[in-house]
Image (cartoon, rainbow, N blue to C red; front, side):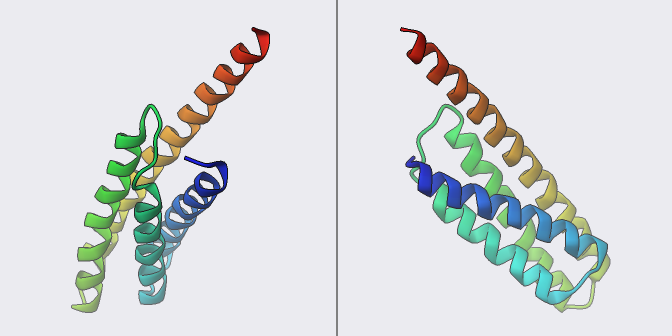
Amino acid sequence: MKKSKKLIADFFVLMALTTSVSYIAHPNIYELITALTLNLIATILKIGSRGMLSVEYLTTSIVADFHLIPALFMHLSGDVAEAISLVWGAAIANIVSVVILLIEAIIGSLTEEEEEEL
């Protein structure tokens, strides 16, 4: 994945995570819609990425999507507590995504250092 595309995808992953956490702290329909939108954009940007953990990286976004979409319907139906529970699942999936992001960054850095030594 080109660095600029990766930068944008990583930005949306982090924004989706922080917006999800913000919704958990203060349930607001607009924050939930924003978290869902950011996560869907991150998912789209991850499609076609190439890396050692790219499948896992994409999977975490899909899992978060599958939590945020029903959370929106739960919130709209008035069951905010259930929506918050689902958003917790999305936040955990996004945390795993950030961990994968960090692992790939470390591996990439180590690989670059080895190539420079040769």
